[in-house]
Image 1 (cartoon, one colour):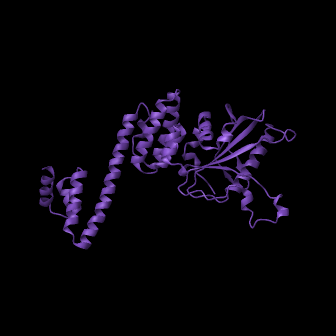
Image 2 (spheres, one colour):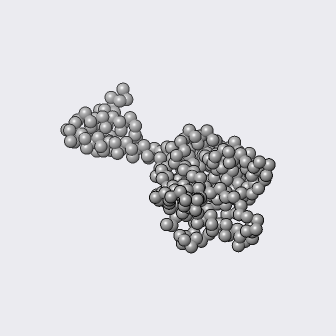
Image 3 (cartoon, helix red, strand yellow):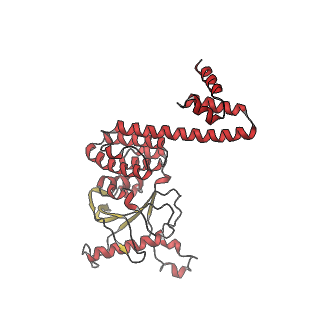
Length: 324
């Protein structure tokens, strides 16, 4: 099953250690994050061709040192970017194969040896699809029906930790106050320009408070441009070089999209009202449609008359009444 991760920009985001740290600290189990020394993060990312699925998939691999019961050791954070529109029920099988391929990669590149043992791996799946994630999270649970007790010890086990962006509420993301939570907020805004405008404003404020403002501004601006392009937003992306410096330009363009969105919503509602008015023969419905347009839009009397199904003179009289 092919995936189109290259368009998301997440691959680049997680090439920077601070975003990996924000992912683990903000969205992974606290007891795991507390063991990690994030100053030791080291990038091991790469694309692997997996014979089983015959696809190149997007992953991010970092190593980090953890200290457990007085012993410090290296573990690998294996993050799979899963941005398909539908939930992949085969994910446990895929993860087992991917991790096996990664171990094979470590051995072939002599980053470890069988005599030393294989390093621990923390598999994570970052998912941002519209559907709620429903796939099993351990391959053992895919073995159905459950085998008799004497066979259970021989079944494979590999559990991954799921981060489902869509399950994060706005309140949760706002309270985290990290750039990554701001990115998730922008993603969750979907195609609502008004929600997107608010989410982008939050991201800009987080950038302005960051001690590395210029650096993170460049990183997030590149991601925002990719995201807006995917949404089909006509916001002068070629002129957007900095979310901070070009904030007013972006805000103005997003505000225009918000106005367009509201107008389209009004027009859709008005069309419904007109249809109901025709069906019911309701003059009152037509007049209510006209009053709403006078109050909430800059349409002229001729346009309002056509939309509401009234005479131009009637609309002009209503406008005069509204003004007085």
